[in-house]
Image (cartoon, rainbow, N blue to C red; front, top):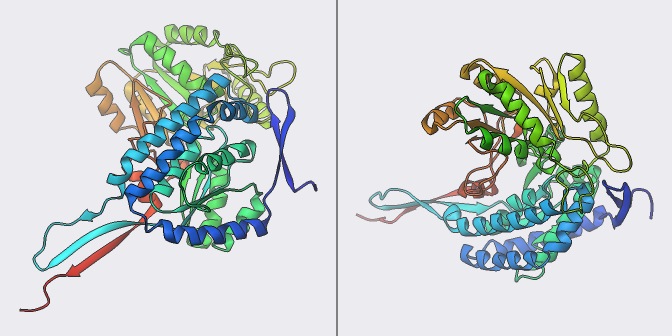
Length: 464
């Protein structure tokens, strides 16, 4: 093999290569897409009910693969095995939800009766959907597009993140155990150059990309040159506002989990917290104490709460972000450094005396790092939450539901929670604003971004 013909998968806990995969040649990609185009033309004619029934087999097939897939996730990107198993289960629940929403999400929209006419709008498939999922939630991010796209009558080409290449293959293995027609879904292992050429040749009809803002902008530039539509889920710097009337213990426990679950490697992880000043000192003490309970270490150990970061380069980025904040006046309460020995481990980190002059409070960390800041009013809290180039999720913590809803309406984010964080409800639209992306997955509306509307306008009376 040449240096460019394979992918080494490195376990971030041990820094050792545990699997090597052959890359897909450009000729192979072309052949896959030719077969896919033929298969999709037949698949689009199948009734939605038939597509649902065939795709339902995917859930059972994947459930039988739960343990080896979870272990692969852990060894590819470092997620604790307990959390990796939970991701498999959550993915299957999400798949069940989208199967249940398909009929309503794809049904014809019939207009009000008009004498002598029949009018309706139908959702038609786009053709071939290229899905480029991220590595941090490799099953959940992929299923958001793969299953709804197939249910909508499309074919799907999966180009998974390099770090989690095995997860794209796992989807194919599960679909092979169903009645899904051959060649409708495929997984490829290619470099950025091949993706660029694939887009330039307009071999696909829609692209879904989940990843960094920089990566999203680059793919968007390439797609726009071909007038290809895209869905983008990019970065986040998701805030939380804790009001004086919040359920204190509940807020602390949930916000620690929202910040440090999956080692903070989530686009919707809580990355900055604003606390009403009268509550601030007590909140910070309780928060730091809760963080201190986390065990950092071997992700295959059931007791581990935080595993390694997925990439070595993240260690230097986080250390620089923390050190810079401390130099600017921030106070480090916990963590802030790489652990000794092998593996890409970074200790869970809490800082106070922070403000928006610091990169740590404005740019995505994507790791186990959080800044906590006191605010003197709700207006100040909302202003600071909205003071960001990102807008994926935000959370408000209060026992006054009506007041929480009023504040949520003023918050600039695709999803606003009250007394919840870092969670996706598949019956709600998953959207981002500003640099967090555009488009929509999940819910009934998620099917609309994987189809195009076609209008039918029939005159039923032609005489008289």
